[in-house]
Image 1 (tube, rainbow, N blue to C red):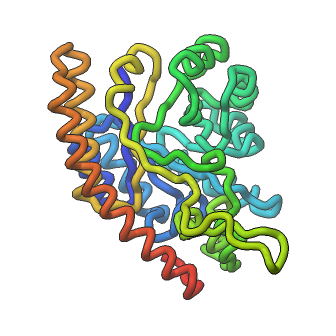
Image 2: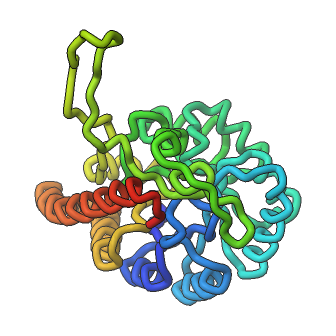
Length: 318
């Protein structure tokens, strides 16, 4: 049975995602994951989220996928001790050194190599497997055949994003936001760089601003203007049925969306997967349903992007 993984940007979202039919939920550890702290959870809330997950016979994953400084390794170990004591089922990481710490300290804790690892072949997958990862998140640009090869030759579980975005760089590797707006803060003693998701803060989405391409001299004209860099959202549908025999987990992103919208998205995919498994899918009906959800999702994303752009100008976190 394929695992359906949903986002948990708040305790309310955690519970509603399980009510919608998800098998597992992932949450961000405050100061340690690639989102604004507004959508991350503190220790007490994570402990309660784990209890909710287990009440639904589900699993809770904690994301620690922001790159730490050397001086923060001991902080990571303390946080890891807490997550294990709180009975968090899995930890999402993109730092191979941290994976080895988890493997050696708590071999019973499942490690997921984040999309930020950008694993695109089975040899890379083997590297992360040897560091302790039991599952890897496949890059969005990989074909189903490439995903199957990674799974079979590396001997790891494979997770695929079915609601995410196609970045113009590799997901998790873009530093553009930190060039536009970067401010150092501390969050519970942890370095927190507002404007750099790679170091724990929020991305201000500068790629979605209007850009122009100019020549090198003062007298040259503008080659192109008012264009966006590629950063398109997607909601998979037709790609899913053939995946069900190959992948182990389907992931829905969206900690920053409204609880109601995320509930609808998770419920949609739960029902769609169940019908696929039963062999009763009428694709045209599901396409129409998805179009309606996508319109609401796009409207929320536009509002969120405008909030982030305004915050970038004001140099505040949101």
